[in-house]
Amino acid sequence: MKFGKQRGSFYFTWGYNRDWYTKSTIHFRNTTTDNYDFTFIDAKAHDRPDLHDFYKLDNLTVPQYDMNLGYFFNDKHDLGIELSWDHLKYIVTDNQMMHVQGQIRGHQIDKDTLVTPDFVHLQHTNGNNYLMLNLVKRQKLWQSKAFQLSAIGKVGGGPLISYTISTVLGNNDEGYFHYHGMVAALSAGLKLDIFKYFFLQTDLQGAWVDYTNTRLGADHQGLATHHFYSLQYKYQFGFNFPLGKR
Image 1 (cartoon, helix red, strand yellow):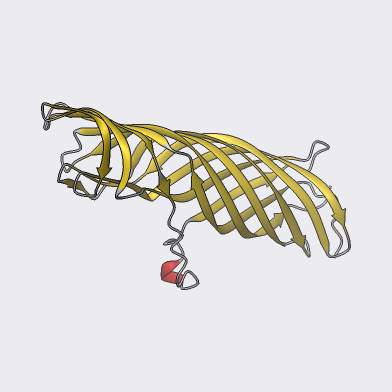
Image 2 (image 1 turned 90 degrees about the horizontal axis):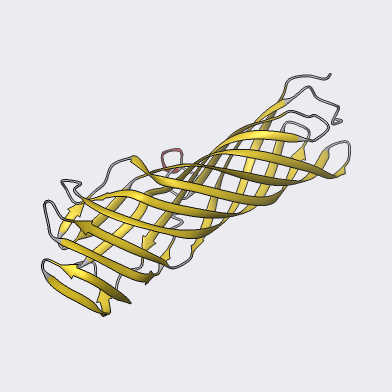
């Protein structure tokens, strides 16, 4: 089937990802229902793919997944617009040595400290979610009767709608979905269209992430703030929905 000149086309993608994070400086504060104000310097974090049994219908959204809905205008600039939901997982590594500064219940601290889960545990695992509106640029590289290979670039941003699980000084919070901050990202990848209606796509995405509203504790009176960079590798499949030829 040939790839004719289309009026426009919607598309939907689904896939999974792996993630890598820079170190971050995390500020913890609660001066109402507790008394602490301290900072972790250069905290390390990692992802959690959870890809076991991902093929089962009731497990599709358990791993780190990506979902996109977009539209290509099929104009001379070959641009598109996309709404994306990237579900990443961010876990501050337990039992790591890091420098801690500030005060904890009236006691000053300024030293390298082994941070155990009994002291602080923090994870954005349901998740470190990027809800973004993206501008998409497509550059066609090669085409045959049945296949089309394109380079895809994206730039976008939006809110962090995240779910954080935490324990701070014994106060555990299982979390809830709410606005946590903002994210901005750039990505580049390849898209292989197959018989016009199906495609495979892979992307490498770099993002700047700013958490400004992470609530802590069962009463949600604590606050954690930090920012970091993430690198995300995505592997996806999708469906094209052409609107017809011009």
